Each structure stands twice: as structure tokens, then as C-alpha cells.
Length: 455
Image (cartoon, rainbow, N blue to C red; front, side, top):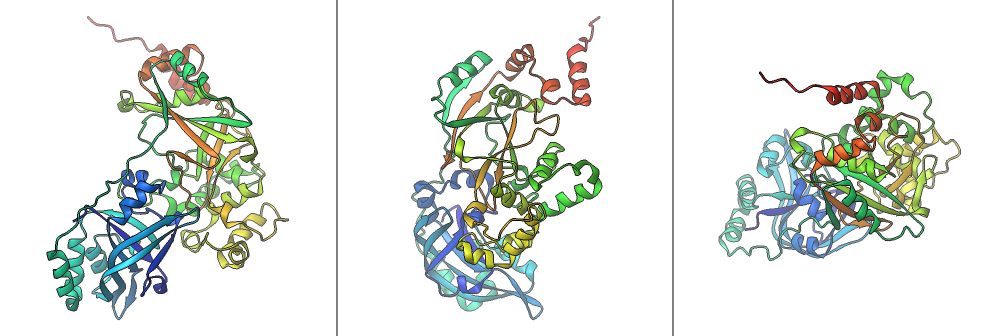
């Protein structure tokens, strides 16, 4: 049997009961999916779709409490004819075992049967889980004995192993460098700008994903911070309200919060390639011998946004919605239907607090996008880093290969300490990149510390 399986869950039972086709918003794809596996799947290319069709699939309702216990509608089968567009993923569902309503002693009993945490059972999403489906089928048969003969027949039959392996991450690596000279030579080999702007980002570990901090996940695919995004922002505002008095827009506040280290939906990028090279080399001591990388983003000039853009206001104010409200967002709706929804009204309320003239015409296509934004240089870090940001919309994921309007290429970086020494000679170091007094003190201490004398 396969070492992975699809787990597809909907809050609306009508999306499960008797259906022959399922559709899932791209923003809900691969939640609770191991990070490495999700990184290979998120582009939803031909290899990823072929892999998904080889996997056994649980199609379930979210769990609901009933008569002191818990109940779920459960179907088991396989997927066929998977197609992915900009908004959603569509797949045919071919049932093998119809469990119907399964009653559990409690929600904890349901989580034990599905080997999941309780949060997952209350969440509309599509996960690719690790492990075999067999133990879950057996657990369901124990809780609904009339399905046991079908489960036994299925497990006793010949199991077809997946013919398509899990896809690996696909990166456009254009060079590998070990000094500043080689890095600059690689940049010189890039195509001319041709009405595009170029930005850079450095990762001290080439395995890091292009994911903003608030959207990062634990290795099992569960969220680290997203479920608390609105509370994170509000708690920081409460504690340090005076720091944000000069910020006109929600985006301005997110930039300041990012500066202070709070998880946000922003990803720092720079217009200066040497700053990105510094970040690819500078960091934890245990990563000094691990290859880093500089990511190069090519963005058409017409697609670069500014801090006062209406689209930027819409995406930024998603941070003010609660997790439950975010779960109500349906990007598959047309503009009229979306703006009639309750959650659109909540989002509009936050947008109008900074733009009173804003009209209720939020485009759901824009709401799920990733945009490149130039920020005001209002703090001491953005200016020396030539800072800009990628702002992530609802459920947005950036494939390693890039997307329409955002081309990505990469340079692998080794010999980090040697490069840091070269950059220091060019006055690019922790003091100039992080121009705060504490960082300057740390840099000076490291620079002037005398080696311990030996007897």
C-alpha cells in the first residue's frame, strides 16, 4: 500500500455526501502535509497531480459533536482526472468503501482513529498525510462493524503501489559561488532588465522555503502562527501603541512589526544583491558549513505595488481577521458574490478604517495573490537594506519555480566565512545591515576581541 494518502475534509456535508467530484481552494491545499512533501507538491504541476491520483483517499466531513460523542461522514476511494487552475483544484472521486456516518465515543476517539490532531478534524483542507491508510481503515471498521467485510476485502486484495514518486522541489539554480567575485560574475550573466525590477533574498540554508513567518508550519504541516495572526498584531499594538502612531496604513504597521521580529505575512527582499549575499552567509554558527542561497526575483515594473495601493490594503488587512473569519473566505466566488459575503464585510470594515473612500469591490483573485511592495523607509533597517517586501494573500503559496509575474532564479553559496570577510572589506557587515547600537556593539566586540594567549 502507498506510504501516503490524501485526506480531504469539508465543513459542508453536501460537499462530501454522494459527490463524484471534489473541488478545493488552492489556499487550503497541503495543510497538515509534511513540509518537504508540500514543497514538492505546491506548484501542482503534472508530476504532482499524477502523484496525487496514485494515493488512496479519505473524503470526510469535519467532525461534529452528537449525543455525547462525535460523528463524521466518511468515504474512502481514489481520485481521477485532477485539474488545477489559479483558484482551485478539481478532482473526480471514485468510491471504494462508503462508511457513511461514523460515530465515535468522543472527538479524541476520532483523532485517534485518523491519527490526527483535533484541530485538523475541524478544518476544511486537503492534506497529503504520511503513513498507510490501512490502520485507519481498520480503526473505522472497529467503530462501524458493518463496514468490516469491505475493509477486510480491500486490505486482503492486491494493493497497487504508486507508479508516480513524490515530486521533488524544482529550483532554477543558475550558479554556485564561493566568493564575491564569482557572485557578481553570475549576476552579470543575467538577462537585461527589460522593464522589470530585480530583487534579492538571502537564505542561510538553501533548504529554506519562500514562506513568510506567520505562514510557516511545523514539520507535520500544522500552522505555527497563522491561527493567532490577528492576536499577535493586536497584542503588540496594545503593548507598544506609541511605536505605531505614525503608521498610516495596516501595511506600515506590518512592516514595523516585521522589523521587531513579529511573525507577519511579509517576506523581506532587497534591491541590493550584496545585502542578500550577506544574509545567505550570516546566521547561526551551526549553519556556516551548510550551503546557502541567494534568490533572485524578476518582477515586471507594472506589477510592483507601493505602500498606498488598494490591493496592498486588502491583503494587509487580512491580518486583522480572526482565524475563523479567514476560514470563511471563498476565493472561488465571483466579485459580486464575494462582496455580498459576511467575511467580505468584515474585511471591508478594516480597510475603511484606513481608506474611508474604499468601495465594496474587493476582487477575490487579488486577495489570494502575492504582490511585490515597496515600503516607506521609516525605520533604520529598511533603508540600509534597500528593503521591499513580498506580501502574501489568503492561502498564497509561492512555488520554487516562481509564478506568473514573478520569475525566480537562484545562486548557491558556499565558503560563507570567506565571503563575509570579503563583504566586511566592502563595509557590509552586521553594523551596516542592522544599524542599531546593540548590533554595532556585538560587531565591534567580535572584531576587536583578541585571541586567547597560549602559555
